[in-house]
Image (cartoon, rainbow, N blue to C red):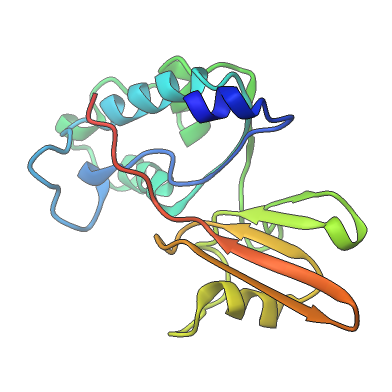
Length: 182
């Protein structure tokens, strides 16, 4: 939050996995994970609101909520939820309407910013093609070499760039942050 305030960005983009959603995961929750998705949503809304507004992309952790609502009648995890979509849930828990949504799918690959050599695709990346064991940022440029890329999902920070025929493009894989237990 402090770094964000010092940088004063023109646009803030959150590249998915806005909540942990551990209770709706196929994996066993950790000891300190909340048994209520409502808690994750409320904390995320509060923290995002401190940044003002911007664009949110949904990630695979956020999609857990959709799966849970569709597949479970478990009152322990769904208590306090309002709405049928992740965005509706976030707004119901206090997220400012200054935050707008971009949802990735097979036809919408994320958010494109800029043009020409500066064109950059920002995406969470769980809908993208398999990368294999290769350096994920390098693999992204191999598959799509004509724009820059920022993506999450892989939980590791990597930067790769490639110059060819006088043009340089780069790809940045975002790491993860410590979970907020507040």
